[in-house]
Picture 1 (cartoon, one colour):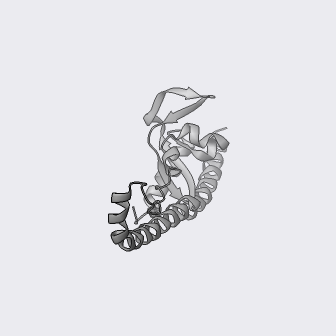
Picture 2 (picture 1 turned 60 degrees about the vertical axis):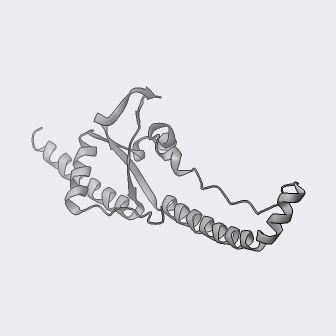
Picture 3 (picture 1 turned 180 degrees about the vertical axis):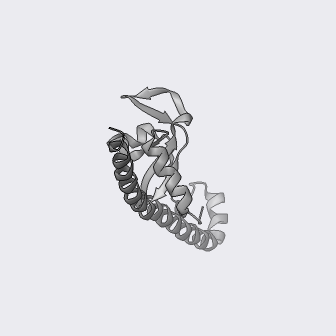
Length: 154
């Protein structure tokens, strides 16, 4: 889990995504406002944090505690290492979540039900903020191009 990084979309993938969103083949989090967690269910699991390690404490059993006191310093060293690992893991997850720009999925993968008129997805793809900005820039250009093209037929 230490390698949480957003995949950067290639230019061809980005163009395909723009076309698919414009043609309503792909649904994005930009289209559902504050309903993102309800629409894209896997996002719920990004909030689950790893469990913080507990400090080694006496058990209340005299014989077990006497034996544990001999190992107490080793337990504290292990706890300190586990605590540092937990902090590192939490920082990595938080950085990943802060860099999420957009969530999307193909309409064909929507579930059979909906919520407030929005589809529900049990899978999704995630774009970083940089890729989301690239997407929005290309989408605006594509939208203008399509509107200009449509005007020629009216």
